[in-house]
Image (cartoon, rainbow, N blue to C red; front, side, top):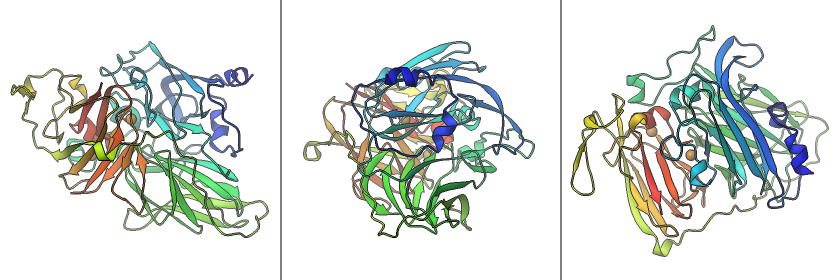
Length: 468
Ligand code: C2O
Ligand code: CU
Ligand code: CU
């Protein structure tokens, strides 16, 4: 019966409604059904900000610019991608521990999906939480034009919230007439990256979201921008961080939280009283920038202490820290990527390699891998299936880097931003910062590891590793 009902939701008609769908507690039973979605990547003329902005020639996966796919724990997603764009694409399911063949990385895990062609993705996400999906081809342009969506796997609430809101942060690189401005430049790629002029939440400018007055509201906040790091905080309401990258953690009061590109933050917020507003801010700028307003509506809930409940733990495979092998990766700036010394002492000159992009500004352990490099480089490391690893991530640059690993969820060993026991797929390194992550290498395949400031990724701060 569930299969039948969900199958009727083919296409995209329900996605907008689900952005504001209230949470209802439901039982999750493994293997109970499938959710089927057709994602047709095409150019669509949309208004940005949505509703009243100029027309923009966006590239999106669906008629509504930010499709939201919801699964319950144990459900299978069957997503049919059709490419009606003039260039190759793919879909990467960011943060989902998919089988390697479903990871959507051109050349590493699949052929790019050529114009006019399609690809079927099918998998059961092993974890609950807040995820997203995006292309992994010419990403700076494709992501900036809009190719992204939200994937939510429900079933992690022990104590249900009174309501839920999804807040997607992204900049639009458009001018006042709606024309795209340059997605990248050499100067920006070598520094913090290119920022969009128009900052949006759910493609609106400081939207007002109604929330039940005095209720406990779950905010699923996603930073899907290619560049911008936000320092999130709330004024006018109590709030606590309950999950990072979809993984529950012991709730910590939200003072401010730095959310880099690709990172997600789940927050429980005690909604303000009837007619009152709480404001979500970005404190990263000299003057705090309001991002969204949350307005209490309906009758006030009775007064009671704010005591956010922890989410149900995910299926995280605990690393064996005592026996873990230790590795280190250093993230560097490089004026020109010169040469790579291979394991056997052979020297590979990048200039001789195939399909290199001209500019490389960044490197991991002195290797640069531009997007067009295909599989020219050897893996950063090879991990034994089933073993545990601790990797020290060292930032040798003056810039911030949100470092992301495909295929795995890791534990952040060093407390960061006041949170202990944080699990994540992306960790933000500050300038000259370092941190250790740990995981059990339980997902076999070839996986990417890269900075999620997309211009850094595409100018060298990218590599891959093998679990076998
Ligand atoms: Cu969301 Cu390879 O990235
Ligand atoms: Cu990923
Ligand atoms: Cu970076």
